[in-house]
Length: 218
Length: 138
Image (cartoon, rainbow over all chains, first blue to last red; front, side):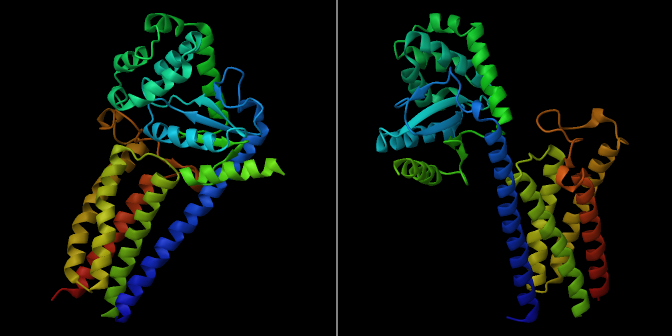
């Protein structure tokens, strides 16, 4: 290798290294800012209306901000379910809405309305399962989502009526207000006992949950 | 000889830094690039690759290909800068959907406009490549 090739290789290495260091620094800064916001606004984590799964007195609470039209949220659903199976007595899941995609707000309202027929989780699972057929970004086909929901035995006409209720609108408004305050910008965003993931990924979620469970066993 | 090569390396470093910065702003900071920014990226990203290879194998032709890319970049970045400065009527903006082309401030750099940086980078690269090509021509 002559000196020119060497110089190019070294300079390239420096550019890449600076990029990675900068990324690390920036992400830490964002996370610290979020941690600070979260510690000041713990009441924004879980609301009375928020759907929850698992024992209500569980020591570990996973709060998930999710969007019914988001593919990654769909992929994470079984992962979160598995975590709950792994710690049946220690982990509780609380869902919050982050309707970032077009049409998501309508689906969220339908989900809220399905509570009145005691079909919340079935409806959620069906709508997530059918997501590829209705949630095309930019032009969601909500009728397909409604049809899917109807398959669970949900009275879709009543549910769509209920979805217009002022309380449903209030739930959505509250969740959007909370996610803005908590600086949630992507879905899904997880908080485990108020702690955000150090970096996004299923393994990071699993280890954070494991850490919190272990902490509460002592 | 070596001094001429330094011009090429310097041009490449500017392109590589600009590429890394654009990726940082877009992927790490999550700021979505507008349509005009995309056109500048189309000229800047290959510039980083072409000039890197040209430096690596000390290939003069790489500078000529790079010059074509850099000139294209100067045109788009120049237009974008004029747009932000308000010299071009907003009715011409090709980006009706999505991210606004006139709101491209970087808060971490005291509100410095990204297209200014882009234009500076493209102009400097053009100048350096031009000098390099002139000095090595025979």
